[in-house]
Amino acid sequence: MLATWFYRNAIRPGLFLFDPEDAHDLVANLLPASAPLLNIGKEAIWGEKVQAALPRLATTLAKNSLANPVGLAAGLDKNAKFVSLWPQFGFGFVEIGSVTAAPSLGNEKPRLFRLPQDQAIINRMGLNGDGAPAIAKRLAEAGRSRSLGPIALNIAKSNLPDLNGDAAVADLLSTFRCFQDSRLAYVTINTSCPNTHDGALSEISQFREILKAINASNQQEFPLFLKLSPDSTDEFISMILASVRELNIPIAGFVCGNTTVARDNLSTSAERLASIGRGGLSGRPLNLLMLAQVKKLNELKDAEQQIIACGGIASAAEVVAALAAGASAVQLYTALVYHGPFIVMEILADLALALAKVNTTVSELVGNQKLGDLVAANLV
Image 1: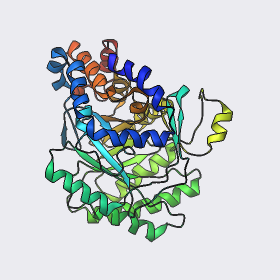
Image 2: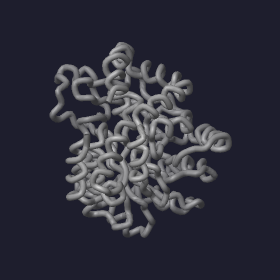
Image 3: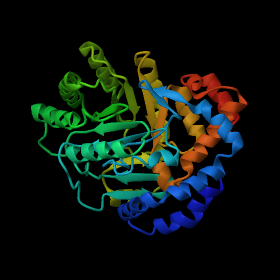
């Protein structure tokens, strides 16, 4: 559509002249003044025909009513500074964080890198953020003064090298407790991705203690989601599911997935990748990894558990594929960098019109591959 074409050809080239983190900060500073532009874009993208079809996007996630299944992934609004603005982009829900117990500056710069040929990003931010007490206070203030859409919280262990065992449990629990008075759609707990069997056993043991502690402190009974890396082995996923069932702790679902350490099948040169070094890869290359994990988990999870698909979502076709594979909702982040602020509205417009053509809804599409193929064939 015209708005996204204009961003790609007129705005993005200028932004990409800046260091990625500097460009991110520049755009963040401009966000509060963007509401009028977003409203103009919405009027242009969501004409009368789209507006009539938008109710077909309504769905439910962890017993929360969503206007649509497209959410903002954790990592962009880490400190809950813009929660009142995201619904104007079209997002049906927002996940803030990852939030850690104490404030952190994160890793040394540079720590954010673009891979334009792959529409991807590599980051090693190091969980920089304002810390749980400050973010909880900010979220409470936003809730008192504005009408907010569904907001979820992503929590993670503080980025400290020796934080393990009981100390890791206490660290994560202190973050969770800061938000007991917040209004949250759900809480996501990050799970790491060990690369050895012994490492997996150690991670599962710590995960069990974290889950028990959080469940015991979950006074508001927030729905709990577990975020899985796309690099997780089938063995690790099976161990996670077995632990959840053995502990008999209600888990609402899973986020599939996080960034990947893999560098397979990229167009970016090996020399460029070597110069960047370590970090998590996000964006378009994750899409197939994410879809495979969603399909696998959909076969293994309990019937009432839901999946949020996150990885390489940048079009209505990719939303349809994720929902048909078994996801109840999707999230995006990197797509905003490469396609601009109107990409969510455009995805929703395309999806709503395609659903209308076959007289179906998002809820009916979830886990229905045959219907997904039919909807995909009717995308504009």
